[in-house]
Each structure stands twice: as structure tokens, then as C-alpha cells.
Image (cartoon, one colour):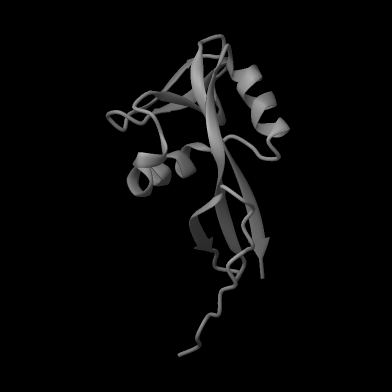
Length: 122
């Protein structure tokens, strides 16, 4: 059996390693939760906010994992993901950190945001 050696990325102040996923090709994606969250006026504003923080909004799968493993890092509220609805570009997906639901809503809705950054290692 071959052992896989994983290198944990260096974290900046206030960051937390959320999880790491090793892909079949051997690459590992580390998802790092950035400090702070905010309520924003729209999905576009949330995407811009995350970029200003040096990150991105989590995608739907990442939000589900964050809800499962790090719910204490979020307010019991709805948070935007970076994922637009495939069938309607006016909507995007969001995650409830109160009850765990995921749903899509009009991008003009006022929701909370929390940024992540991702590092891929070989």
C-alpha cells in the first residue's frame, strides 16, 4: 500500500483550514476559511467582497461541508455561495447555517457572506 503524504498549507492570521480533498490524480485541494463575515446587498456585492478579501465565496459542495464540520464559524443565517443557478442566471445558490438547507434565490437578495481561499498541492 502506498502512503500519501499531505502538506498542510501555511495559514495567515485568523484563517482556519476547513478541509482538504485529495483527487484521484493525487492533487489535493485545501479549502481555507477566511476570517470575518458580512451582510451584503446582493450576490454581486458578495462576490466582490470575497475578492477584496483575497478569496472567493464557497461553492455549494464546500458550503455543505462547512455546515457539517464548522457550523460554529457561521451565524444562524443564510449565506451566498459562488454558484449561479444553472437554469436561471438571475438566481444563485445559498446555504442556511441554521437548519442546513440549500436553496436558490434571486441575486438581489440581502444575505451574509464568508470567504474561502483554495490551494492545490501535488
